[in-house]
Length: 519
Ligand SMILES: Cc1cc2nc3c(=O)[nH]c(=O)nc-3n(C[C@H](O)[C@H](O)[C@H](O)COP(=O)(O)OP(=O)(O)OC[C@H]3O[C@@H](n4cnc5c(N)ncnc54)[C@H](O)[C@@H]3O)c2cc1C
Image (tube, protein in one colour):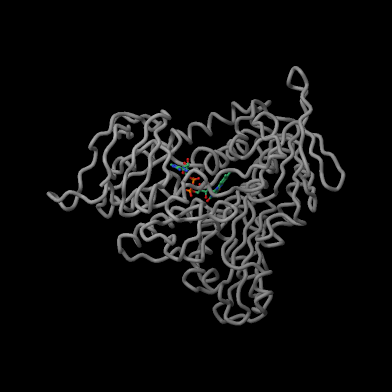
């Protein structure tokens, strides 16, 4: 066991929303092996308090282990709670509500709930939700007896980690039987791009905009770029979305992307695809408000805009980990390689969440954290199923699970599709979403469900019905033979299933009932 130095560890007592620093306290007791001095300071040390780290720590505590979680910033929750998922999704909700966007189908394109929406209006809701999520995370960890440490962790050896405390002058070494690296990612920075957080933003600081710009350029049409572009466009900001690829989100069904592009254009988004940004400069005006960002494209075009969001990807946050001290290495994007149990090549050291790359979702990160710890302590658990949904919170929302038409065509699998438009469904009319689309992809002969793709209100909730049927290897007959609440969007599943059966023209006896609207 390493010697305890004078360093300060975070106390669980009296913690507010921030991690508190104080003298080290013996806040945990070894729950096993009373009377025997433990060979390590902890059974499990988790580095990073995002979704992956939190789940790992709580799983360790549930297994009755002595667990600590180390977080380098002053708040719990990681990128997910503080800068990424939760802020962007709450912002979206605030925008849709205050702008009256969802009701424009009934009251006209100029309808709004609040005139002159400001960043402050939008941030009231965002900040409240963030605070709440931090509180919940802290309480969960405390209830489970996880020690919270506010420090930057770096390796000194395979089982030893140095903790550099936030005051910058104290440090301490600790040992652990198992270490889980859950450090997430940092925004990728390019020295050519002046990311000043005043004119040119990353997704980490875009919510620090002091006011809503009239024009915004978004560089990078990945999930985050598309989400923010469509959210700001829904507010009436004139957005230009630039990407070097020739289509948005290539992993999403093409028909769904066509619908997204239709909506983006309807909201006056200019799409600049097949275009690369060579450089960006800021033409400052002495008194501020007149400053302009100029984006110079490789094609020779220059886009002049009030603000820019640079969203070209994230890299594993491994640079502070001292990986060379323990014999680990990362790839060129800072990511760690793991096996199917999330083991790095060092026995006892696991890596989970965004730091291991694809799929880089909060949902999968949590599950990876749990599974890694189960494996580390010899508890059997299933690995993350290959079948997980994607939720893209653009306006409109997109969600998908299973295969796309493109993938099935490449694999030579004979499939058919069945579609339901929200406008065919009473609920679609009621909520005023008449462009939503749910698309089922199924095997031509066996009718086995192979994929579900949705664009429209509630897509990321609705997807789970399809996910359940897919997970159990079900066929589209399930939707035909099931009664759904009326009027709901879930009815789309039934209409799409009938539409699909119409297309293959092989009705089973059980299908003899009148198909609803898709006939
Ligand atoms: C704008 C945006 C929107 C997103 N939207 C969604 C969405 O809608 N749905 C979804 O599923 N996912 C979404 N994501 C992705 C999601 O946020 C990530 O998948 C998730 O946060 C990954 O969790 P993690 O625990 O691996 O890492 P993180 O959440 O990044 O947490 C890592 C933590 O480790 C800490 N840390 C780093 N280095 C050290 C160190 N050396 N010592 C101590 N602590 C350290 C960091 O400070 C951080 O708190 C979004 C991401 C962004 C950026």
